[in-house]
Length: 259
Image (cartoon, rainbow, N blue to C red):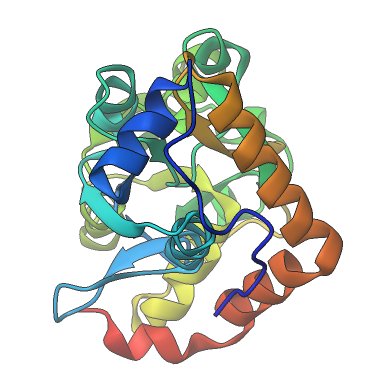
């Protein structure tokens, strides 16, 4: 799909670049994903992992002349896997934060989002600031290990916080009435409403916070970070990244492929 080839044909001449050496030696780029955050990443009813980030990962692997191997895991397991060297990068709706950036490198952002609530309660959907949902009578579910979870812990101290291992689990809690709302990225909330048109789900008019999503990389290979940064810059400058984003966010055909 993406055809920029400035990085194509990577050779194993990467002294002092342990991650690039590993990628070249194995002939594959290993990318970690939660595979459950449509349309960024998701698993179809046939078990295939697709999404905007998956296309981006495939393009990067193609440009390096190696195969792409996806490793699906729960979101909170991604950073430990990267730090342990089990994956080469994370492309999974991960917000760039100072706390994370102290442990791993980031390139981006390749997408900008913000926090929102997904709920069946009109009063919560009318929130204009996070404080508007900070009510001790309300329960909110977040993705375990996410910036949403951290934000609720630090800023919405009055609500009852529930953690879920996946967005599918969290959304089911909202639909079944086990919790009053899900606190998550705005795009996730909007897409969920379209996925479940009969459930009377609501979200806010605009995001309540600013969330820049980036590619997380190991902290021990500056050349690999430079390669990814340059490639992402080429995608942005050429308009390919915008085209890819519009394809996944404006064309809902992929929804038919989901369970």
